[in-house]
Every structure is written in C-alpha cells, then in structure tokens.
Image 1 (spheres, rainbow, N blue to C red):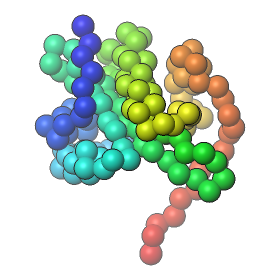
Image 2 (image 1 turned 135 degrees about the vertical axis):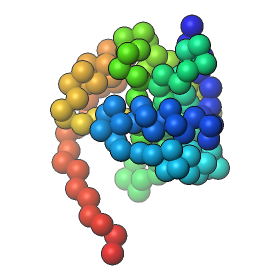
Image 3 (image 1 turned 90 degrees about the horizontal axis):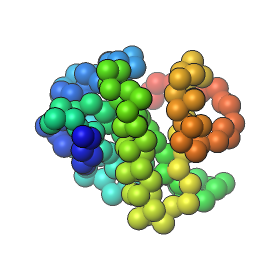
Image 4 (image 1 turned 180 degrees about the vertical axis):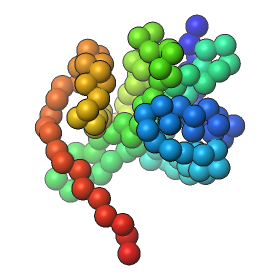
Length: 143
C-alpha cells in the first residue's frame, strides 16, 4: 500500500538516489538543502510516496506567476523508482499537487517533459494532461 506525505529533510538520501535514475546528479547535502528551502516556502510543495516505509517516488510543485497569463502550478519534478512504475504512484503524487493547487485557487496544473521521455509523455496524456506546445529550452550561467 502506498502512503503519500509531505517531503522531509530526512528523505534527502532517497530523493538524491531517485533523482540520479533520471540523470539528475544530486548528493544528500544538496537534496537536504533544497528540501529545506521548499518546505520553508509558501509557493512550493513537495511530497514523497512510500511503500513499507521506503521512499519510492517524489514530486515537487510550485506556484507560478506570469505577466501574460493567470497563475498556475507547475510540476518541477516527478520521479518514481523504476522498480515501482506502473502502480499508479505517479498519479497519486500528482493528485496531491492538484489538491495543493486547488487550495491556492489555481485553475491549471502544468508540466514540462523532456522530448526524449516518450514513456512520460504517454503517462501524462493517460492521466488527463494535454500537450500545449513544444519548446526549446535555453540556459546560461549567471555572471
């Protein structure tokens, strides 16, 4: 049976390990600091999924303001352990962010997904997301 609860700093080791499954290198210290900042923010939420007390997935959502559109909540990250996929854990995690978004009077939940992750695209469309647009992401170092 899956239990969903708010993320805690003690989850940092599991969160860091899960993050590496999708290629996001993270150590315990970094994950712990990020979790602490998220938990101290009213504009962020994060939850973990546990089976038998073991963290098998996590999700992060954040409240977003834009000049050109109404506020929305965006999923910043969602990872379910590769050994526990297809058990509706991701859907349950999204439902918790959806509930959080409703509490913040937001009408849209959005997610961005790497174009290479076709299995994730199928997952999102199966649970009700609709493709909105395709983009190219750019970044630069702050100097």
